Image 1 (tube, protein in one colour):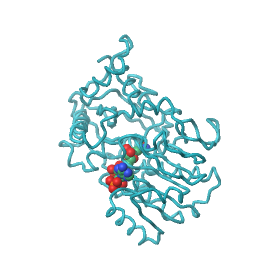
Image 2 (cartoon, rainbow, N blue to C red; image 1 turned 90 degrees about the horizontal axis):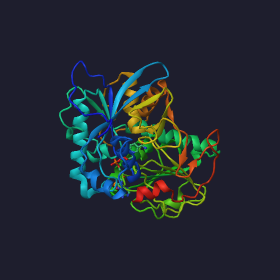
Image 3 (cartoon, rainbow, N blue to C red; image 1 turned 180 degrees about the vertical axis):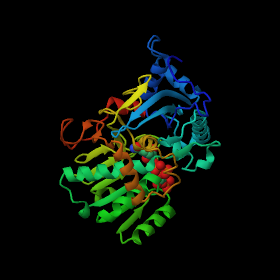
Length: 389
Ligand SMILES: NC(=O)c1ccc[n+]([C@@H]2O[C@H](COP(=O)([O-])OP(=O)(O)OC[C@H]3O[C@@H](n4cnc5c(N)ncnc54)[C@H](OP(=O)(O)O)[C@@H]3O)[C@@H](O)[C@H]2O)c1
């Protein structure tokens, strides 16, 4: 395929790869765009049905080089490796196939001699944050990137509360996917700052354990496996469930609620009736020290309405590379503490990696040069249509 980057064994002193990012596409449109760049501009784009037939046969591979700069002058060189998990095959039925893809992508990263690898989205969920499931890692460290993700979710919630004049201390916070790595990290950071916390997930035992931990810290907590009662009671909502597609309806939401959708892929269904709520996509950061792709995947791998915006999970690997800390900063499930979030936040900020401007499917949600604060009903956009497809 065209001008792409081969995933060749390059271990040893000649290796110039500081970091590798492992990701997957959230929609067929995104996957089609990636394939179009890999095939090169001289070839006519493939029809959608051919792309859907072809993608499951593409093995994990590096698709481009990345150069990232820091505001204090550090530079790091990396690779983006796509596991090519088809966007409609994140379901449990494909778990073995997908774990094999993540392992293949990890082997690819290890072979290039990357010193640190970030596992984007489902790449870490599939192996449940357990790096023992990866191939022999030599000197390559892996991170799930979830600590920086939590940092940006929390920053986004605080920023929107400040913009809308909300008092965090008087708020009721609902976390969907509360017992996951991201959800529990958010709970540990935000629970001490709010009035009451509502935790939701499917497994009641894990919910009880998390609730007990928070209660021991004096937090007022309730748990439920159904959202029916919770949705209407919360004025802050974090959606961090590992859903294979945007299928979360949330139910009857409180008018004026602030809702952070941190899913990758997104959690919220385009059919969710969130009238009167302000929704933003959370866990995203922005690189201010410079980001270059070769070949040029700008706007294709990072499909956001603002420049150099990247998922927090992938940014963590870049931040650690710029800092020269090649270590498994985030691993396992449920071990993200407030102190670790602050530490990671400081590393990222030192290199100019900061919270991305807040936006949702309809555009920016904050005042400033990029847009205005608006209460947006969630309407299906062309992008979301592709996600569904
Ligand atoms: N924005 C970013 O940069 C970024 C970065 C990293 C991760 N993420 C995304 O954040 C989400 C969570 O990731 P994670 O690593 O925390 O995953 P995780 O550790 O696997 O946790 C997933 C959570 O969702 C719950 N859950 C799963 N299916 C559910 C369902 N159908 N209904 C309700 N709850 C459900 C799980 O509990 P039960 O199994 O008990 O239901 C668990 O609490 C994923 O979408 C991931 O891709 C985003």
